[in-house]
Image (cartoon, rainbow, N blue to C red):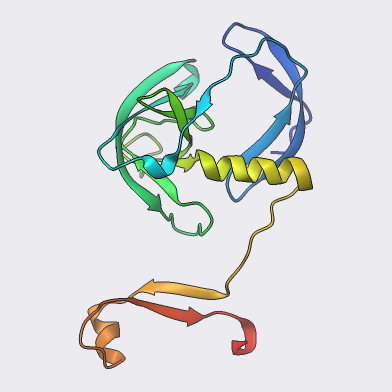
Length: 189
């Protein structure tokens, strides 16, 4: 954030000065442009095909240890984190630590299905829960950054809350099936 200079380093020790094309803080995705050649590529997978229990692999630089690989399983999909309504995270138990953010999450077909983003921890270190941005979300954000320079999002103006048994009773409902939808638009519009 607010860097004066950006350098992209490759695993074969080449370095490139990079230009920031655009960044989106809500998804933690940025697009950088470099003048390079003979750069390696990876294929992208479809995160919607991931299933809980499926093995995945993360590559990153935890604590500065470059090109570290860790493996684990998909714990859940579509996770919403507190204060974040924009990313349906892939939850895994892959060991992700400081320095892994921005690294790829691969399925066992060698396809990138996510970008490792964050951990949920009380200590600041890995405690068995990590989150990745689905690659289709990241690609959509990147395309908007490249074409428009910013990301546009639709907004519905409601808050959806799980319906507890207490809430169901208060509304005269026989059970807690469904959801409570609250209008959050000013003046009830």
